[in-house]
Length: 392
Image (cartoon, rainbow, N blue to C red; front, side):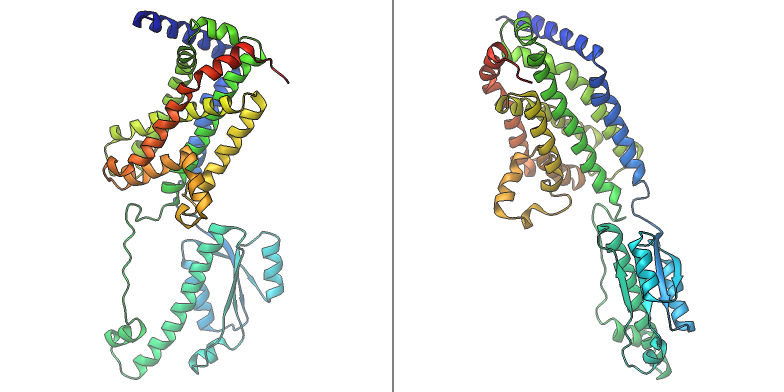
């Protein structure tokens, strides 16, 4: 087939697909409206970077100036808001069970007296670990307050003994630790959550739309017409069909990248134009994966179910919440089959850390392999389109 004939065939199939897109509102919701909503929803949801003023409570049975100073210090933390003060632990526990607070701090009677007498008083803090992030942040701040209180009393005693502040600091903190978080020194949760959750959601829509658009050709009996429009060439049929969808998805992904790295100024150690291929690869690899799933499971319902399952599992296996290296060996091997895992690694290595693209070559190779596998199975897909009978 001559080059001009190929171009003409691709154009005919692409125009046919444009008519299908224009007539079916589901495509516009899945390709444009819902992904754009997700982009602005997640970035605005975490625009502060870190949760602040999480509701907590205190149970102060000591009622001394020291305990009140401890409570004021706790309330001064950015992530803690001492919303309630209860008289006993039972009331605080009930408030936590009702979901009114995430944690409470318990100061028993005699805490100040025991501190002054060096009898190691015990203070307790309870936090709801069902809310992983809120519980971890409140645990950190409550533990810090307890350490500061102990250090404050120790410093007062050593001052009374005539020691200088430099001597006191050397005793209380023999080793001074300096932390230097790289790439995300603000510890902004938005910077690493949005860059994985949003692409994962967009990829979910690409998977589903791809499987749906092929499956409906069988469902509505238009599969033979689709293949005939491409002159019987399944490669042309696939390229022409997914060019219009791909262009729309690329525009949405381009909006996502522009909004994150230009408008919101997410940290990136490379020029913006170097991020564009990342977005293009995301769209093309996701479309190819959707085609591959339909070839393996040639059923509209089954292919869309597998695509949904694979996309949801991608969030767990990508490594952004829990390191893949700490998972069991079979899960580590399985993670190579998830496109989001490779996009996450490319983002971490090349975009965020500014390393050379050579360090990402295994992940690029897997994504390119995913793109080209459907080309080798196009004959199987053609036979499906010409011979399979749709079963509801």
